[in-house]
Image (cartoon, rainbow, N blue to C red):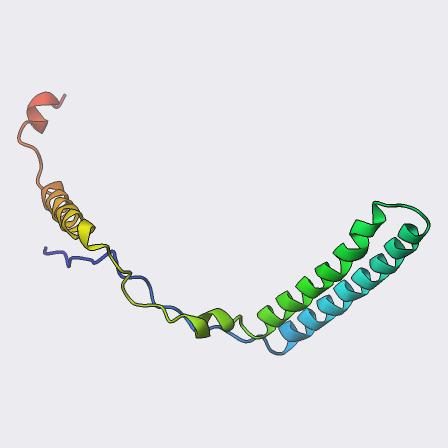
Length: 133
């Protein structure tokens, strides 16, 4: 039976990003609201501690708003299917190969074809090395 040769250099097709709607979108909105509430409360708490003289709290005063901004970014990415990366760069069906390696690729593909062709052929000395009982 002849086997169809595969070209392992072809990447699978890229599926279109899926926008979140319905109940999943509602869950994202609720999660964002809870996360931003936590960030605001933690910011307020750490600001009070920092003003009372806890110098380490100044780091947290700046950390909580940054975490809130990151939460909004992730919310937006999940909600809209993270299409920004797909718009910026179109993926090619076949990755580029440096010309100096094309001969190596051809040799490797021939080697793989030879291995697959010889896999189905049993060795002649297999029965002599392992006699049946």
